[in-house]
Length: 149
Image (cartoon, rainbow, N blue to C red; front, side, top):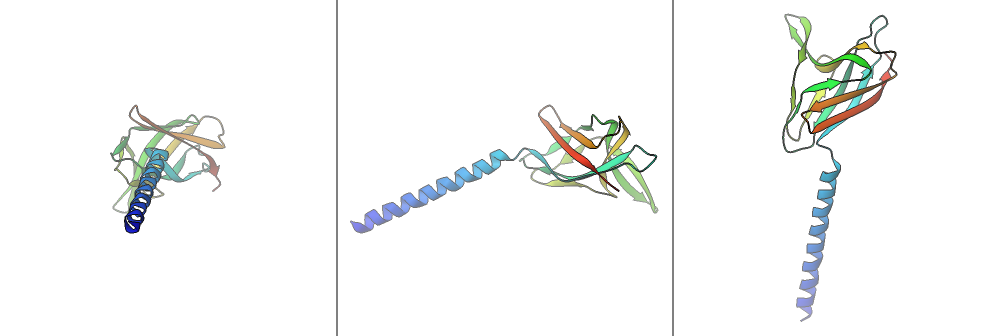
C-alpha cells in the first residue's frame, strides 16, 4: 500500500512538472512577436549627403516564412531594401523589392550585403523609425538613434 501511494505521488509530481513545462513553453511562444529585430545600427549621413544606411538582424519567430514587402520611415522621403553585389571587382547596389525571412530563421543586414537605404531626409533626424511591412498582418516598427561615424 505504501508503494502505491509513493508511486501515485511520483506520477502526480511528474504530471505537474510536465504541465508546468508546457505552460512555460506556451508563455515563451506567446511573448515572441512573429517578426523581431536585433542589433540595429543606423549611421549618421556623411557630410554633404543626406543618405544613410541601416543594418540589423531580422528574426522570424513563426512557423511560416514572412515576406517583407516594403520598408518606410517618416524621417526619409525614400527608403528601400538594397543588396550589394560584386561583379568583376565592382560593387553595385540593387534594390530588393521583396525579402523572404524563412520560418524560424534570420536575415542579416550588414555592410557589403543587404541593407536598408534611406534617402532624402526630411529635416535633421536624430532618431529613425523604420516600419517593416509584411502583408496586412505584420508591421514591425523599430526606433533607434543615429550612430556617429
